[in-house]
Image (tube, rainbow, N blue to C red; front, side):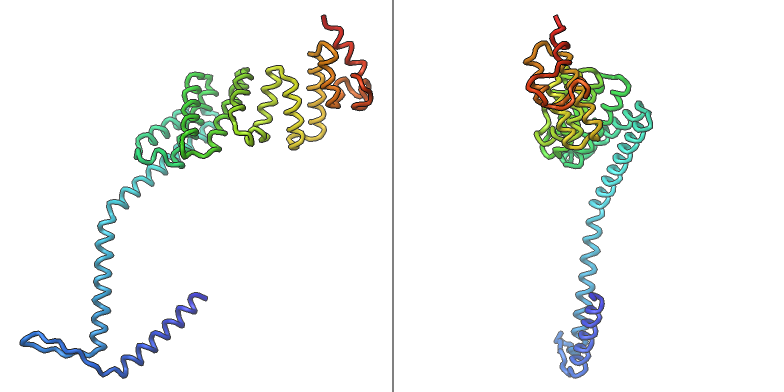
Length: 302
């Protein structure tokens, strides 16, 4: 449609020009003593159009020549960015392939290239994301190599970059989740729960964060928190109904195993989960007191 409109406009301009130039008998006289030049109006208009086109082309040429140094700098910057992104991709591929030492070296090379780039662009959102991912990749590789000092150094650097002004909020959340995961691998549930507590309220209720919180609570022996987290995961359909029921029954059984009196058993009973199996606790809330199979387990403790 646009091409058809342009074609119609071109034909209309050609017809108007033909009508104007065909019946135009005017002349333009130029006096340059001792000379006199008589030109037709059509020729003068044509010469003016040619002069305008010549000046426009000359100005565009001068502007393009003056723009060459800036374009060269931009091209070099783009080449450096492509090389840096390629190194980061190589680091991720090496990490996925299990070559953790190569992955760490590639990630550190990315950081070296970023630090050697323009200082004015260090605070750009894209550069902050690149630095965070490079630090995180280096920390993951160091964690796989059991190099705790290097992992902590890169983790702290990633957290500092992700917390800086201009960085996306998801970067900091990703770093905190990875830190919590590493703390769980190191059998440090208190540190994992502390990292998860630094997450925003909305991020704490995501499935990934709740899974980590469940593992940390079970490692720390906080069965009540583990039970509540498991219910949230079941509500979010993180498990199948059968797996959720089995998990909750297991957590309730662990709570009963650690109970010493009836008061500690009542919250478990109020939750309505049969910790001793259907043969001993056939239906939740079927009686006002805990099942008989739970009391011997409680009172048999010294």
